Image (cartoon, rainbow, N blue to C red):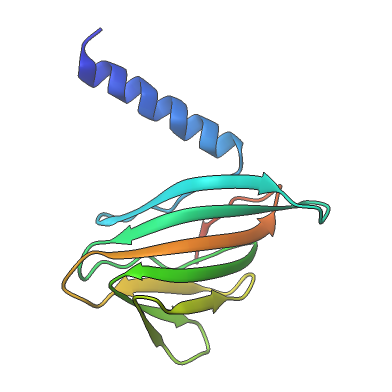
Length: 134
């Protein structure tokens, strides 16, 4: 089996594993989210997920929701965060932002370099981590 075929099989296996774990990532071109850890909490039916998101310049995550809270820290760059019904905020390196459970929101890299975010999600265990907004 050649290397591209092996890579495809590994990618499919990882995707199926993450999907089975309830971790669904809405990926836009130029936006990536990588799961770092996922642990059950002492709160029944909840788990905490940490992920690193990277946005290329000018790229948005796409409007989506989470079945729980998102607590985020900007590792590099700057991101404009829009939450439906609230004024947009710009979070820069070293700053934080909070997304309430179920809120329709989107992040967009407004800078000229890659933006990196560390997101911590406290979410329902039996639901996908991210769902595209309608």
